Length: 427
Image 1: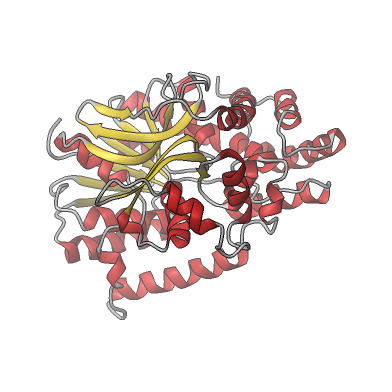
Image 2 (image 1 turned 180 degrees about the vertical axis):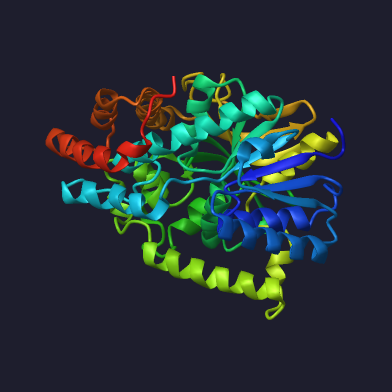
C-alpha cells in the first residue's frame, strides 16, 4: 500500500464527528501528502467544515490536500478509506423513537441502539448506508469502509449481508467505560488499560489493568466500588455485582438492551442541550475560521477516544497499530455468539487489513445475556434489509424492552408511518 492515500468522509457536515476527525488528522504527520475529500449534501455545513479543515491543516502543518464534493460518487474515485457519519433527519425522528413508545407504556432509556427506537434507527439508516457502500463496491472496491453511524452493530451486520466491501465500525464507548471505572478507582485514565468483548454499547471488560505494571485492577475496583456514591451509574453496578464484569459504556446505553434498563434513568437523550451545544460549536468554528477567535487548545491535539485515523495510519504504513475496540463480523472471535453477528472487540490494523483480537470465552451468564440481544439485532437487520413490516413486528416482539403486544402494534403503526419515506428493501 502506498504511503499516501485518499480519505473520503461522507457526512462531513457533522460538526461533532468532523471536529474529532480533524483533531486526529491534523495533529498527525503520518498522512502528509494524502487527500481528504469532505462530502455532504448540505452545502453550508460542508463549506464550514472545509474552511475549518483548512485552518487546522495549516495550523498543524499536517500537509493534507483538502477537497469538497456534494456528489459522493465523484468523490469516491480512487479512495483508500471511506468514513461515514450520516443520519436521517436525526433529532426529529429520534424524538419520535423515544416519545412514541413511552406514550404506549414502554419504559426505555435512549431509543437509539436497542428497543423500539433501535429498530427504527435501523429501518431508516441501513438502506441509506447500503446505498453508499454499494457505490464504494462499484467505484473503489478495495477501500476500507469505516462506519461511525448508529446503530453500529446492526449496520455492520447488515452490510455483511449484502456487500463484499470490508467494513469496520468504530465507537468510543470503551473509553467512556474506562472513565466510569477510573472515577471509582481514583486513578487517571492514562494509567489504566481496559480490554472488552461483546456487542456495541454492551461490551464487557474482561480485564482492567494498570498500564505501567500490568497489575490487575479488578480487585481494587471491587473494593472501592463498595464505598462509592450509590447514585453513580447504578444500573451498570448492579450488573457488575451480578455478573462479575464491568459493562460498557453507560447506564443509558446499556439500558437500551434490557427490560429493566429504565432503572438507570429513562430521561432519554438531551435534545435541547444537544441543539444548544451545536449552536455554540458552530459559532466557535465560525470565529476560528474568520480569525476572530483563537483555536481552542484541545482542537490541535488528538481527540478523546476516536480511532479512525489510527486505523488508517496502521494500514497505510503497516505499523500493526493496536485499536482498543472496533465492530466487526464475529467469525468465532467471541465464542458462543453467532458467527454472522457484529461484535465489538480489540483489533490490530496493518497493511493486510483489520484483525480482530479474541479474548476467550465470556462467562456463561454474560454470554446468555448477549445472546438475547443477538437474536433481536439479527431480526431487526433482516426487517430493514427486506423493508418488511411483518419482520419489524417480530423484531419488536422478541425485544426484551417490549412488554406488551398491544404496545408493539401501536408503536409499529405510528413509527412505521413516520419512517415510511426511508424504509425500502435492500436485498
